[in-house]
Image (cartoon, rainbow, N blue to C red; front, side, top):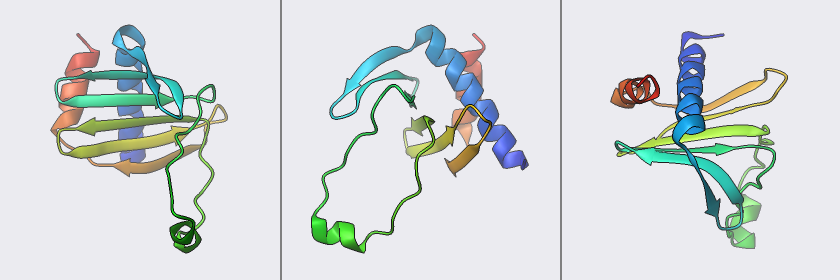
Length: 117
């Protein structure tokens, strides 16, 4: 496992601890309830096998031009800071991990401080 993946997993675990203690279930149109947390310029959403993936409206002509996407893993975490998405990671219970996006930055220090308060 690369250092980048290790750091992304560490951020996932910190986010999970914060969301577990302070998160709330938020209803997302077309996707149902997902655990979320928002504050200090951070927003986090956890996806589990118990919630649906949101469906995006798409013109059939555009859909034909888009490459077929990979299958999502059952669990997913998205984190945004004020500038945009900084982490998108998916995993399953067998230990498979897909690191889709990870932009390192100040948000990591913010998350660490919030999760260890």
